Length: 464
Ligand code: PFF
Picture (cartoon, protein in one colour):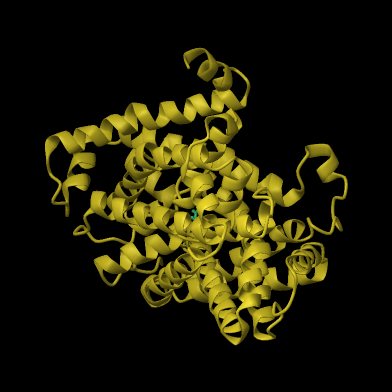
C-alpha cells in the first residue's frame, strides 16, 4: 500500500525548501568559476536574461504540473498525459539526471565538508595564497579523501530524506537558508574594503562584448537550469507536495530572485579576493576553495570562526539541494513502485554513492586514467557538462512544451489561477506564450549552435 502523500507544513515552508533546492553549490561554487572562465559581465547579463525569460516560466510550469498531478515526475506525466503517452519518458529522464547530478554534486559537497573540518584546526592562518591553492590540489588528487567525504555527505543526505517532507526537508531549510544569506551579506560587505573591489565590480557587472564566445551562451542557459533546479522535475516534485493555496507565479519569482541574489553575492565575495591577490579568474572548480581561505587566514581567531561557519553553511546549502535531487529519485520508487520511504531512500542513496565514486576519483586519475585524454574533460567534468548543458535544458524544453501545448488548457488555467492574486488574463497569456515559443525556441537555438548547425558568433558579427 502506498503511503499517504505528505504536504508542506506551510506556504512559507515550500518557498524556503524550494529556495533551498535552488540555492546550493551552483550559486557559490559553480557560478563564480564559470563567470570567471567566460569573461565576466556579458556572461552574467546573458545568464540573467535566461533566468527571466526561460527559468521563471519553466519553474512555474514545473510547479503547476506537480501540484496539479500530486505526483512525482513519472506519475505526473502519466496522470496528465495518459498511461500510454510517451511524455513519461521526460519523467524518467528526470530521475536519471537526478542520479547523475547527485553523484558528482556530493563529491563537491564533500570538499566543503573537508574544509569545514580543516577550519577547526585554524589551518589557513599564516598560509600564503600559494600554499592555500596547493592544499586544494592535494585534496583534489587524493582518492581516499574524496571517496570518504563523498560517502559521509551521501549518508547525511539520506538521513534527511528519510525524515520526509515536513519533518526532514522543511524543518532544516527554515533555519539554514536565512543563516547562509546573512553570512554572505557580511562577507560581501567585508569585501568592499579590499583593494580589488572596483575591478571585481567592473568584471562582474560590465558587459565586455569581446570576451564571450557563443559556447558561453549555452553554458549560461544550462546554468540557469542548474541553479534554479529546473529541467529534471525537482521543482515538479516539490510542487507535488503543495496544497492549492500557494501563489505559484509569486513563489517562482521569489525563489528565482533569491537564487540570483545569492549567486551575485558569491561573486562579490570571491572576485574582490581574486583581483586583490592577483589571481586568474579562470581557476576552475577550485575557485571558491582557493580564494576564501586566504581572507579567513588573515584575520586571526575571528577568521577561524568565520571560516568554520562559512564552510558549514556551504555544506548545508549543498545539503538542501542534494536532498531535492535525491527526493526526485526516491519519490519515483515511492509513488510508482510503492516502496516505503525508508527502503527507497537507502537503496537509491547507496547506488548514487557507488555511482559517484568515478567522479570522486577524477582528480587522482585512479580510475579511467585515459578518460581525460579521450574526452578532453575528466570524468567529473564530463558528467557535469552532460547534465547541465544538455539534459537539463532538454528536459526543461519538454516541460515547457508539455504545459504550453499538451496539458489540458482548462486544467492549466485553473492550476495557475488557484492561490494567486495575479489573475489578470494578460499575465496568464504571457506565461503561456513564453512556454509555447520563447523558452523552447531559446533552448533549441542554443542546441543548434552546440551541434554546429548555426554559428551565433558569426550572426552576432554580421548583426553588429
Ligand atoms: N540548484 C542546485 C544548485 O544550484 O546547487 C543544484 C540542483 C539541485 C540542480 C536540484 C538540479 C536539481 F534538480
